[in-house]
Image: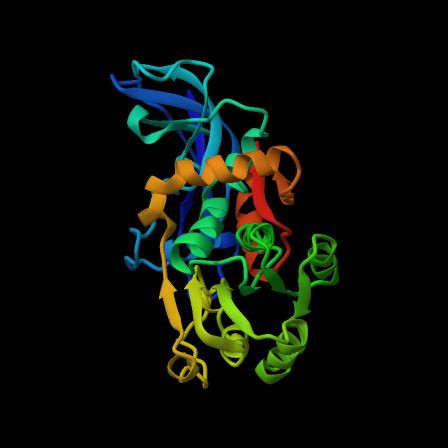
Length: 332
């Protein structure tokens, strides 16, 4: 059986382009004891993958040049030599960027029973959703009385963060760019604020207008002027959960930090970065809380879907121009 997969051709400086990726194929070896073979149905592309394209280890090892790339995926088991994983099971795993994956059975997770669409376990019920839940609950310790600000608020992580905060009874402000993203935030009861064509001071003023009582919790996905603007509106004892800073992922040199970082001292605020994998033991608690809300429509989610394995690099690059609304997926 032939598997088609993407490899990285070079470690790019700045924004990658389509030449950074090569589509290759290879015949899969016979299954060994404990292995499974999976026909992928859905692939995930995520901003954190850019950090794996630098050749340097961060919190995760870099992609190796010329070797199959990895990423979240959902598929159906088509062959198994693992006692607990059967043919026909739907599973999630990290053998993405390819059409057929052959992996150790211990590295795949059967999908829970239920009516949720299978691709939801790459988005609202998967790593992005778990990231939003972790940042709000475990890192920022969000309370019902909090005023909450979320950057990239219509993205895969931010769109759930704003809804979880709303469900707690918080006043929520969301930063986004395009008009349709701002309109979506408003439709779910979130105060929308645009960063486009604004300085940090102008964005800060807009946040103040949307949240006159200041900000108690800031869920950070972007960095740059969003962070500087948020720092200026912090209340005493505010908490900042740093999920990512996508604005700098393709920078060829480090950007200067916010000019007003001293606000952390003035406001006695706490700013903490986190990696969701470190909190995966709480995943079942996340599912118990969020799955019913997704099932009955209290939490809504959006997906941007590209068709075919060949569209995977294009889907990934689109993340950095804001072309996605909600979770970016590739359907095979």
